[in-house]
Image 1: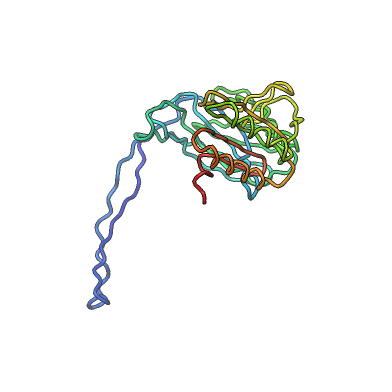
Image 2: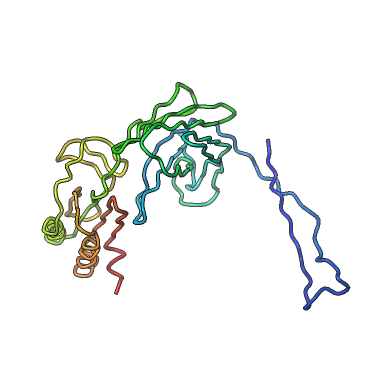
Length: 273
């Protein structure tokens, strides 16, 4: 099976105006044959909130169970909404032929828009088969319930929502003092124990009050991950990261994210005036 993309070219001869009102010269239409890649792998579905300073965006993420190289392959499809019902079509795979030389799944992201607390139906069509997924939205979580099928899976049926005043990340340095001073400064400025329940928050996972995983790795000899509640204005945090970045330069690395859209990196802020 193949699909055809209509491609057409035109050349306009312009010299202030057309002579004798002649129309522009248009070349004949041509067709470019593009290979069609059917979806021949199971698809995983997930839901998360993308946090920005202007607000939060609820998104669906679809990934293939198969992985492809190079990186950059996509699942092509579309979405429409009528009240609490979403119609989603996943049509084909767009297998990349350029990108990083690593093997990763093909992906597709869809924005869901505003979702008040309640139940929402996803009617998802893949290879002419329809699978229904129910999303239950509450103040604290997203829960996905999927009907039995052989083409669509849910890896994480419950994702907890991150409170706005939560911050998380890592601080590391080549010697023990810089990163420790940074973490101490966080607490002095108002960082407190997070108080979150155990579970998966997508950006991090909590196992107990003192045990969590931020899904990242350290590259310097000394360092720690952190997860706090921080209620004051987060401009304070930005200035703190910037100050440490300029004072210690390459010898320290700080990565700080937050529920109000914070995205502070010492490697970026150290280059600011």
